[in-house]
Every structure is written in C-alpha cells, then in structure tokens.
Amino acid sequence: MSDVAEVIAMLADPATSYWLRDAIVSACQRDPFDAERDALALASLLTRRLDAIVTRHFGSPPQA
Image 1 (cartoon, rainbow, N blue to C red):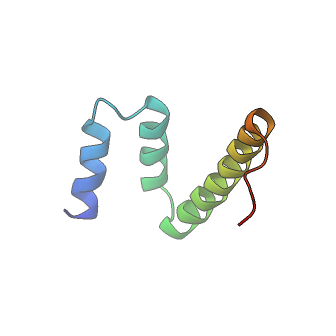
Image 2 (cartoon, rainbow, N blue to C red):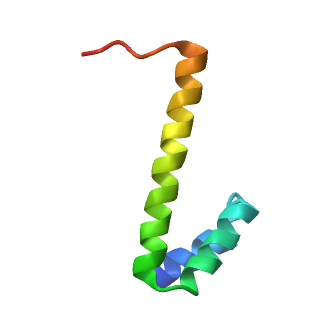
C-alpha cells in the first residue's frame, strides 16, 4: 500500500479518532521533516507520561 493510500485509509477508518485525523491532515500540510520531528517528540512525551502513570498505579517493573 502506498503512503497516500495508507493516509486515505486511516482518514476513512471510523476507528480513527478525530484528534488523530486532524493531526494527520495538519502533518500532511507541513514540511515532512518538521512534522516527523514533532511527532517523534510528542510520542516520546506521551510514552513517558504513560510510563509515569502506570508506575504510580502499579509500581516499578522488576529489573532484569
């Protein structure tokens, strides 16, 4: 599947949230390098936030 077809499929999928649809449309209107950098920064921030929430509720995972 081409990247354009994949974007269209995600936008057409009823399971895709409005927030994600807006983000995809916005990202497609931007410089792709800047959009990717911002998306990676957001993903990193959200991962750390989720990890902190999980740790608060369930404690730290055992160390290997």
